[in-house]
Amino acid sequence: MTGDQPSKDGATGTAGQPEKRTGPEPRLVGTGIFSATVKDTIVTTVLAIILALLIGAVLIAISNSDVLDALGYFGVYPWDTFTRAGDAIWVSYTSLLKGSIGSLDAIQATLAKSAPLICAGLGVALAFKAGLFNIGAQGQIIAGALAAGYVGFTWTSLPIGLHLLVSVVAGVVAGGIYGGIAGVLKARTGAHEVITTIMLNHVAGFALAYALAREIYQVTGSDERVSPPVADSATYPSLLGVHSGVVVALLAAMLVWWILERSTLGFELKAVGANPDAAQTAGMNVAKVYTVAMLLAGAFAGLAATMQINGDQAQISDTLIGTIGFDAITVALLGRGSPLGTVLAGLLFGALQVGGVSMQASTASTPPELALVLQSLIVLFVAAPAVVRHLVRLRDEKQDSTFAAKGLSA
Image (tube, rainbow, N blue to C red):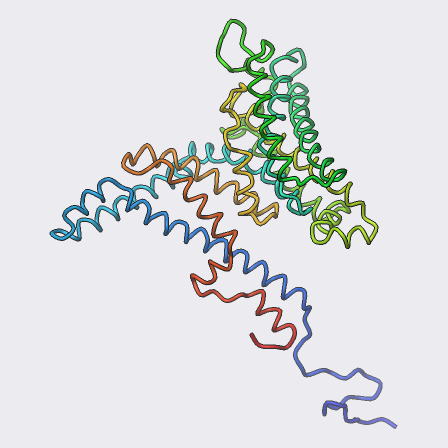
């Protein structure tokens, strides 16, 4: 006997055919939480940058000598103070923008400055995933620069192409070994990586000074603490006016993404970083993961060194590395440890550094350290997302999505 039979929810269905549901379509809880997390991260990061620029505008106004002069007669001509403050802020930020992306030369300079920041930042981000705070990128970059530079200016008999490859590999290997020292100490003795990497930074700094005082790292007949120039055969070729190390940095970001998202090693890195005890119980070799994580972190820092010695600057000097290793920490923090975020953060910091020079040149009455202050403010707000949400009254989208997935209201 056939016919329409009442269903449990009041709908009717034909015998032998599945009943149609009239309720809302089911959705994956994890998808909603993930999308909310991504949205919250992007919104918070953008707001952190905006807040940093607003506070930077206030600092420009109160530190500009013309504005301070106008404050002397504020009671007579108050509008003059606001006009000068607005002019100072406008000139400073437009100079910052034009100096970083306002012309082809500016874009090329920004890309060249960003490349080592991206590579070193990727190394720091990888260590973050394993629950390790790698403060030693600076020392790892120095180790990579010493190795890459030595090969670059001594092994000149190698043919073009091979010479560059060997020099880059030497820098990557040296940086990896130097980073691996902290990894082995962490794995074997439990020594905290923050302490060991800070100490290794000092060792690398003294090693650089020692090397530049030796004949092998000095230009013949010169007393300057500068190494011989790297041979042309060991330099990155130019691509659209900027060295091709920029492309290498982007490829490195793709490699890190693949490691984290598509490889067993990436799964182990994230598992150990989330809970090393649980990872150990699950059969993972936590000591091995720590060692490999620091090896990779040092290798990417060594790659960053080649962006300098085989790219922008062809000689090793006391000022070659600058603060790239420490800036890489802020780049990784701003990028929230993701490869794409690290690339974008590296580009932002490269633009700030290049544009800061232009801002200093065009606004003599504005302190040149303002670009560094902006970087610090951005990192401060990104590192404290709760502060950003409180200042702009932004709801926690991640929490709201979790409540909604459970059928609750925030």
